[in-house]
Image 1 (cartoon, rainbow, N blue to C red):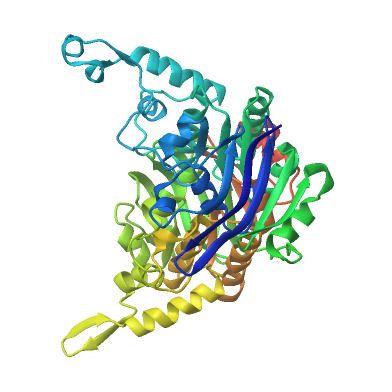
Image 2: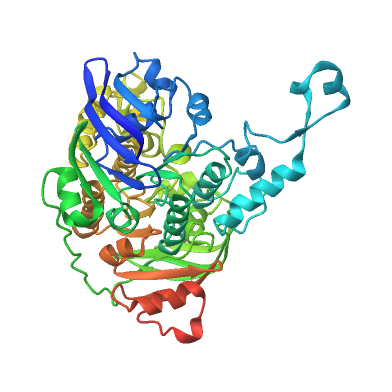
Length: 528
């Protein structure tokens, strides 16, 4: 029996039609996969299902939907939640200043009578924090997340934030349909495996799951059926057993997807360009305790490990975004870890894993986002008018269009606001801005999070290209071990805030697993 039916749903923003005659049927208790390239219309469809204001503030939508046999057209997220629909957004919807418990129980708080409420009414009851914490702890335990539920969200790694988003939905009592948008994008492979088991358990309890992801192997593993969107239309619907991963990828992008292997060049004799010793970084949830490594000029070094073990903290500490100590020496010169601007001026660039918090000016145009760092740090895109320097808007526009084409950023023009882009396209803008600094060392953290398979290959190919053609040294931190093995010359595994092993990309899976578990006595380093 169908829980959700969607009939001829269409949506336009002005003259741009983003959805056209969408039809879907999702059965009760199934896990239904929804895939498509960034810009295919997935986010718009999710906004319709969850009653997001952007839909109704722009004229609503055409077509009909039914939930559990009853007409369904939510005007607000609260109305959707009242009907039993929950959503884990790709971009976090957490309140940084609130505790984990307060975020999980937001708008569903436990209360108890107070002296004032007995006189003036229930709305003035006090928060009953003990059962709230108990509920939050239960939801976190379901996800095997060991973290103090009283801790504030501000400063937590993105992986932890994702689990908190999921815990909030699990805590709801009337949940019928759970929409999960790229839930595993910030998780390591082991954490993603655990989350997929949770999805299966929720489905076995009768909760219907609409699962959006770019990880097609996850779709194959847990979904019962799949719908593929391309250019705002449904191009394929099938039972999961009737389609291969390759066929899914082709349906998404309309062409064959081929992953080109990285031709690795052994660089044992290359000189050291970045020497890191005894690095310590006070990044909440990703603390680095004692990390030392020599990075060779012109190599691609991968940094991997489980969430919360410190891998994300390495690049953030080097760039001075969190308090750090230790020695970082670039080309013989010791760097001041307290001055991020100095790092940029000395030929280093950083692509953060937090593209909205650190990477983008959401209310500014795409082309300005691409140019801003190079303008501030290197004086690029400026022209002299008498004694003054002003922004060369034509150069910014021209260069922006060039980068939009190079990275296939899906947008109307370079003047479109960065905040209006899909998550994957926002990530591409961040990459364009980092490349515009023309660095000789590029630190990239989770560069393909939330990016579809076609764009992911483009991003990795772009990184390889600038490494090989410009001899740019790249340090790439990723939760996807397969991604590191595809692109890196060496892979450093971080566990408990320390370097555990440096392995060749083709080292056995067992060695990577043992290194991530901290069983160093069983791991023999393959390279140094």
